[in-house]
Amino acid sequence: MERYFNPTAERMSRRDIAEIQLKRLRQTVSRVYNNVAYYRREMDRLGVKPEDIRSLDDIARLPFTTKQTLRDHYPFGMLAVPLSEVVEMHATSGTTGAPTLGLYTENDLEVWADVSARSLVMSGLSREDVFQITPSFGMFTGGFGFYHGARKVGALIVPSGAGFSRRQIQFMQDFGTTMVCAVVSYMLRLTETALEMGIDPAKDTRVRKGVFGSETWTEEMKRRISEVWDMDVYDIYGFTELCGPGVANDCRIHDGLHVWEDHFIVEVIDPQTGEQLEPEEEGELVFTSLTKEAAPLIRYRSRDLSRIYDSTSCDCGRTHVRIAPIKMRIDDMIKVRGVAIWPSMVETTLLKHPELGMEYQIHVSRVKGLDQLKIVVEARDKVGGDEKARLAQILRRELHEILMVEPEVEVVDPMTLPRQEVGKAKRIIDNRA
Image (cartoon, rainbow, N blue to C red; front, side, top):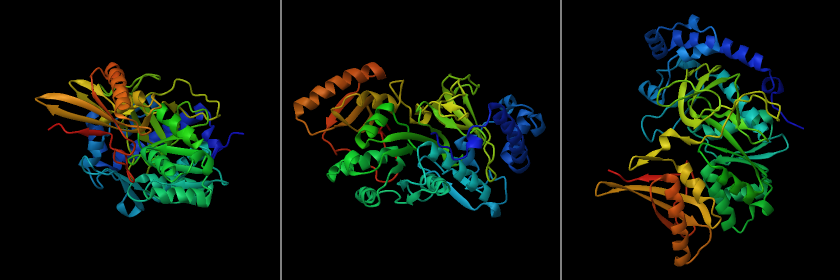
């Protein structure tokens, strides 16, 4: 039997979804026009007033918001309420510039908890579960997003936070953890740690459900994690600026992620022209928040590439539109000799080979003015030099066909590459001056 956290909201008719979206869109546009100088200035520049938003199609008349917009108005320039009404904040790492903030009123936290709870129940969480939360509890939204949702569901929470991988595995055994959430790359580290401790995740733990996000990952990576843990693997989507984890999630059908449309409008645009694309056309995801009070976002460009499914029906019974799993982030793209390369292209090729482990790095350098590409990947087991050379030759040929640039490939021993105990994995090492 299908489980829902909020069956009325999750199964509302498409007509009801459209009506509530238009009502909330008009309210949000009026709120930001009257309270946020940036939106008022941009809407005036485009010649659009709040009263001009008469249909959902009119969203295309509104200005985009970008990460740079938020940085330019850091820290509180995008607030639509007095600072005294803000009760919590989170932030991105700010590694490539000023951090961008997630700001929340009491009601914003309630909405975040609701969409997170919907997503977690869709991933299989129930009151009977022991739920281990491994993302950090800090400025990063991950730990708190899962915590807010799990509290709503009523599961037993193990708030282990980030790092200390051997202790994480011990907790799983001691407390009988049945479900875990993690940053994708950290689940790889937990897998390795369990095996290093002589623990078979599938036989020696009770973890059979997992929900992962914060990084793009391929179907091959999902399959490997699922097999090692005998785990049903779910994909959760969200980001700090919108609310954190809980914007979208896949269901037991594992065919796309349902976006909670009563709280968010999702569009797909051509990343070059900004023009809206049709369902099933791949482009950049753009989100408008419909219920955010502290810092509503209008047409926020996520930099994530995906597509909206043409179908709005799903065998799970939920009626909210689905997006395809995130294919890649535009910001992750690197150009080598003028050719665009994404980590997901490399990962998909590498993980087709069972002889290889799940850790790899992409190194880019410049020698005598010419870009050089090198892929370093770990073998699954320790092997001799001849076998490494054989694998490297096969990979060099396959990657050349996929990437259109011939890379150098080095196969190294297991546990050679650095591991991330906290935060996201660093896949690209760009040493070009």
